[in-house]
Length: 419
Image (cartoon, rainbow, N blue to C red):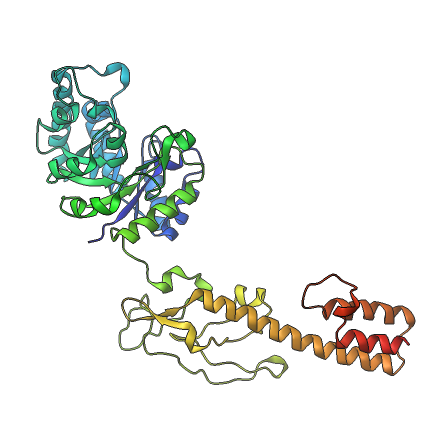
């Protein structure tokens, strides 16, 4: 069972501008973001447009608890503007916390009042935990049980990392609140006592045994999962490693090979018999009619799934313009049986092809240069310059320049002409 994956934008708060990160998150495979106040506060409509432009959704958003009670309609309007379905208060300031069951039940009552108003607009209210809800009160009870024990209409966004920090067991909490959990944050924590990045880490790099939690997650009523890191040194590394680990766990959908490859390496899709354009062809290689190119060059057979024009990558490797051919052994089928590319093998093939073409071009240049030297149409300075050029060109083993043992045929021919 896979889930839509959201990225908690709080993780990137130290790397503005946030809007510039949205296309990158989409490219990594995220389906949505989970913003926090004040990311969307200034102009919710503009924030929604940025999400739409990046192809991302907003499944839920964090908001202040006071706003849920005192500015209920304002935040309902924000939720509708963003297209979010879940309103998530996540915090009680330390100075306001009281170590009594009555206080934490009052927090649950405020959430219930907000949930009643939100339900009239088709919205859901969920509490997001930290570690303080798992610190026992003087009577031995836990704040989290009082908060969620008031009204079942209040759902739960469970944060596994903070549960571990609070001294509780995420597995037990997933079992206890399975029917109340609407979202799961796969926040991972480094070994206790770690100070780097405030002790947090990318999902899968910490101490939580996620593989053991997967069956329990799938038994909940969660509609999506969330990646979050409170203080990453590199948000890109955190985001990419987290979603990769979620895919490895089977919680996030694996991307087909034609989406993983850079755009200029993806096979073109044939629109035949109603085949959708976002699905790669599985009918094998097609041959494209050979047509003459400038300079007597010829077009080459197409790749599996359709032709690929030599774009930025082909030009960078010195390949000829036109349609490039990849050997069929570089095509492989994915789990759905569709043809894709062995990216590493394709890259090696590009480099090998480039080396062969470059060597052939070098041999032609050598022949022309030597013919001119033999005909006596070059002065002494040109001869010396040409000799140095040949020397450097014909040293493929990368040894120390000038070593007589490394002189190859071109250099020896130049030496004979000198004598």
